[in-house]
Length: 136
Image (cartoon, rainbow, N blue to C red):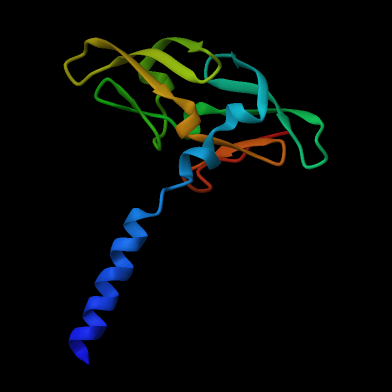
């Protein structure tokens, strides 16, 4: 009986691993947000689809959810902006920057914000928990 229980538990674990994750779909904010742009350095502004289907103006400070790990942009993270410069946004979701490494050299880095942000009823929020809240 114990052997059968272990086999069933193992089979259940394998099935969980085989089920595709929907995290990327859930977090892909550009599916429902338009007019995405950087403003005042680290603030990301967008018009995101709200619960009634209308588009709402929203923004989020990327500094509250993106970090700099020795010259590489990371998400989740925090406070990348003091150590990263020359910020730009490519295709509305790729954040590019030059980030300071531990050797005091600036490195080119980029991160896909679709893996970091989601649209929550017209507000931009972190995919990785309640690391930050947007202001609509």
